Image 1 (cartoon, rainbow, N blue to C red):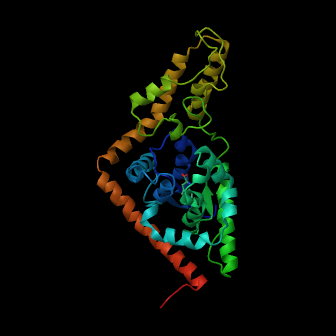
Image 2 (image 1 turned 180 degrees about the horizontal axis):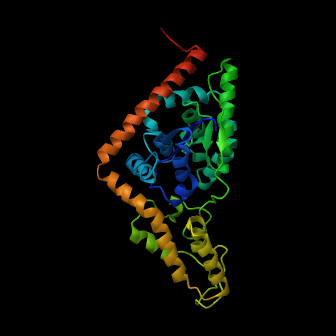
Image 3 (image 1 turned 60 degrees about the vertical axis):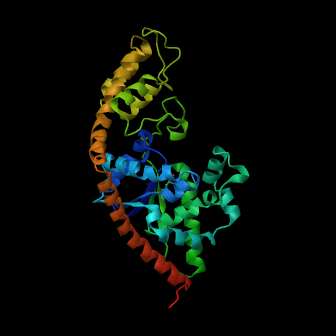
Length: 335
Ligand code: TRP
């Protein structure tokens, strides 16, 4: 396979959870062996809807970094960086904002949906509305040609490529590179929340976090929504929408046993407590090593911050090179 350049990242607004693990973290661990990978901790982007809470954003940078290290994103293979440590990204954003119209930003389906969900209405912060432009800077600064993300992010990639083409056309240059979306593998379904809602999400409060203790994980599994018609263990039960089974399907490696459990539950005789007990074991098998590594790194937060600051400096060199090409193409150089 051709070696590609990848940029992905997360907003540091809270601890990362199992939904992140299934959707992106575990594939980053594989991708770092195949491609050149940049992962950003998007603190500037997090501020676009957290202007009043910079402390939260600041403190979650360390938490996200610990989650990355714990799952096996390796700073020797992946360049992890903090967005605000690269002022070139903000400069690129300023140049790119002139290449996109307000109307186009307002029609971006991803942003439109988020504005509705957050009930901003007319009160949407300008920084929030233009975050696709800043995200374009994050991607093109590294000349990334591959961006792993969900299908719901496709409009973001289109917006990015439109800006790239507008730049190259307007300044008759061949500086910026278009990118492709790398959608998640088909078998990686989106993980529902503990409450059965379609998505595990911090704002819905239905997550299992990578940093949760074994006790917290067990407690959360015990609270999971199952089948309301499955009152006594002897009753036949339903699998569809039964959250412990959805999770077992996602994480259980012993597929024979999984199929047996499903059949047993459907014909009756398998209690929810037993199913949840198995799920707790399965999740612990995954989470225990992650937690152990997380705790180990968390003993020396200063060292973890040194790591991410030093790799941010490396990322900055790449972004500075692109910015200088951009300014050259535009003729915005003063000597
Ligand atoms: N939008 C991403 C998120 O919400 C974070 C992000 C910022 C990003 N810049 C990016 C992702 C560039 C991919 C490429 O988590």
